[in-house]
Amino acid sequence: MDTADLTPYAHLVLREATLPELPNHYRGKVRDNYDLPDGRRILISSDRLSAFDRILAVIPFKGQVLTQTARYWFEETRDICPNHVIAYPDPNVVVGQRLSILPVEIVVRGYLAGTTATSILTQYKAGARVMYGHRLPEGLRPNERLGEPIITPTTKAAEGGHDEPLTADAILAQGLLTPEQWREVSRTALALFARGQQRAAERGLILADTKYEFGTDPAGRIVLADEIHTPDSSRYWFAGSYESRFAQGAAPESFDKDFVRNWVAARCDPYRDPIPEIPPEVVTETASVYIRAFETITGEPFAWPAGDEAPLERIRRNLKAYLAA
Image (cartoon, rainbow, N blue to C red; front, side, top):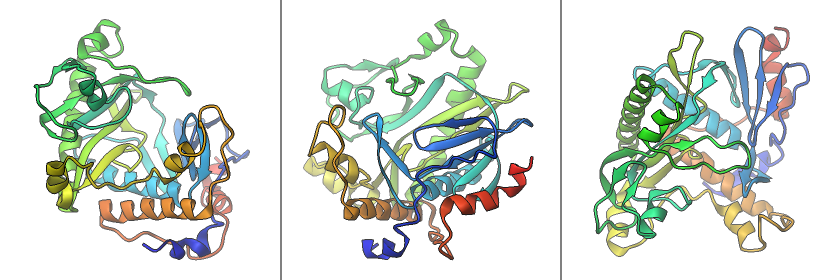
């Protein structure tokens, strides 16, 4: 997509989603959440882009892309696991059932990949062969497919903190999950990942890894929450070029959403220095990548706005029934 296509929409960004009419506001890094008295939760995805423990920019349509990509996957996996979704009153909004979120993040990996300290590739390069309770063989190369997908659970750190690796034994020993809960979320996560890989392959993509968040409803039933298989929660590669690039030792071709992050990191210490002004062309290029990711992953055309209404006013109009609840 030509970034010039975004020019008429550059002003239609959702930086904040503060609605004083709604109760119990919690502002996350990219979502604004409201808990209604009847047990429903309203989650509004803004266009904020978070990295280096701060907000770097607002990317047009990012919130819509994440909400609608998750919508596609929630509907595609409803037969595997119940999810928290009740309604989609707006392109950026999901109304869900409020859950008690389980204190373990379930990460499923199908390839030796990643860049963070908790990634298996980082640990493998450092010499580790046993991680997250799994033993990996010698001789694996970066981005190589594993013999079978593995679960690499982590703690759920508070905002500004860092996730820490866990093992199944540690999860049970610390009482983070019951044995029954661990068996169910493990089985469900692997089934969700298999469905994701299957659907991605049909689109010419490889779903390399992803993360899931589960909660329990008042009856104790385990329910899928947050988001699923979005460009922010998952690593996607293009299947057509994977083998040749792997043979050359090159990184797989992917939806590179890191234009903003890389641009900032090349110009300052993003953890310490003031963030320089980010050029509009970097922002619009990032928006184009998000939109391309949505269309490729789902096979659906992106729904462009029909008019010039400000996103927050549109959301307020579409949430009118909830504002009066």
